[in-house]
Length: 114
Image (cartoon, rainbow, N blue to C red; front, side, top):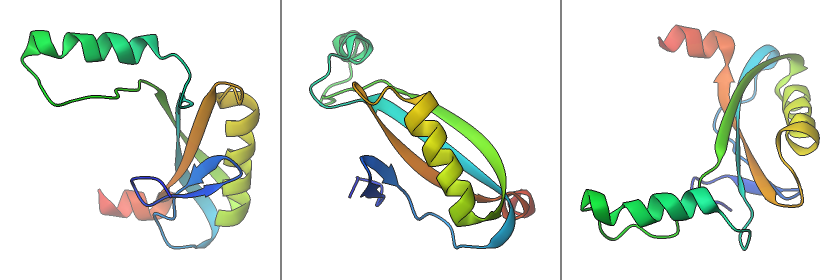
């Protein structure tokens, strides 16, 4: 389990952030970060700069990237499978990066919340 409550599935964290709905468009985020033990020069540079900003108590900085996408599918499970495949085959390098898939919600739910 990750810090945000996501559970690990096949090496990737999968969040259960929204209730399942049947069919439609679903908004996902894929967070890609260096695996533990892999050198992260950007993270080290950020951490080294914290003292210059008079920020203390921050350690273990890791810098990654976030990809947000909308998938149209017959169900949330089908949409999640598509995103998981994209994350593992295209968005992350499985040798040096880990990824977490987060469901942001169904597109209709997200638009209604605005």
